[in-house]
Image (tube, rainbow over all chains, first blue to last red; front, side, top):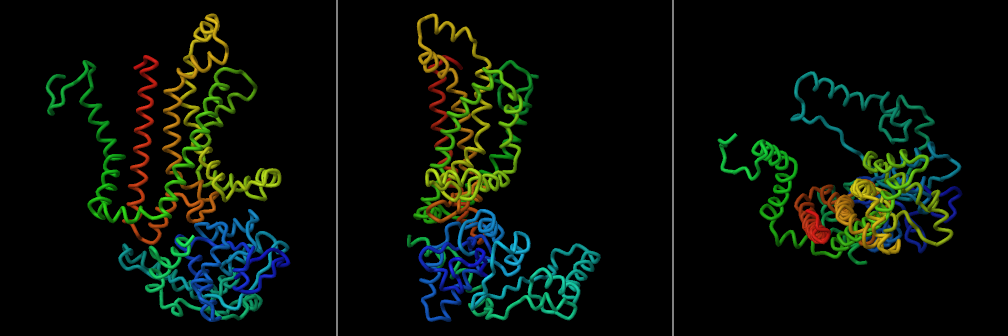
Length: 210
Length: 283
């Protein structure tokens, strides 16, 4: 999601508005932040699907970034509290959180034409389970996460959960429909990580050209 | 106390030499020497000197190293001047709130540096209490530029010079200054030829400590720096970036480079210090 200043003074509607002259984009460093990798990939995906050279597009985007924080929350602070930048590339839930915590009269959410679907995995790690009691607790937690109640709670906090059976319909209605790319669209992390974010990868090359 | 199981002969008649030397060496090994040795081992033997050089010898790494050491030098020089002045005021003058200011000098030690970084960024950001007027009046941005890094490093290095120089100023006999005055020296000459030479060794020690501290500072700087590669990206951040992508060898290479430069700088400062002590005729 894009978070922009109230009233969207720079008229930012989609990814291609971000590379315009004089636009300042706030996004964290993909080398240190997981969310930032998704921001980067979403921009890449947009360029690929709109007949643009993705390398050039992403390079132009990062040339508009005045501050590279180390984490997504740091970027939210830079944009919302320090007043830096015209647009923040944020997790959907972070964007809503910023609106709820810092005032709906200060920012607007802009929904771009393409976004990404990040699904952080959760797993039991067999080797880290010392005894059966811990295993039972961990299993219960894992199962609870996907219960209708827990999913409703996630939806309430602006996460797009799967199970909407117990959720407040208002919570579900807050999510606009849009194209969401998954990591498989980019070839999977095993391919993406070294190609884009590895040493001398495409992200590093953006800054080597300067 | 004569029979010792090892061959080190006591160089002094003071008792307890073997025991204290043993404790010193053990503590130093566990805390400093062994971790450093492992770092160097991993760099030179595990990774290789040529490979390390390949990691270090890139524009982005050089830019980060240069920035880190330049900013640390600037901040420590500022702290050298300002710290001596602050110590002087704290020892020589009486004023209300003196105890509070004296205690406040140590606050940068007590505060988590991340807190300091966030607080300084809030104040010096373009919409901050100081940041806004500075931007309007001088057109200078402080936060998210190199100036912001200087400010953060000045903050973390402030106590060192003050605390090393303070006891020396307390020890100075006023009679020395009076003697200088009765011999016809002007006030300025008394300061430059009598006071400052006496303070120099302690001030240099404080300077070296502040420099060493600020070169490796990470927590406060990353919040205020902006972290743009080649512009405001400090070397410790490059190390963290390498760790984040599981490139431990690359992280070690940059760490070894920082270690080598720091060691050279500290050695140089020590040599200057020995010279200035000799000039003073002190030990």
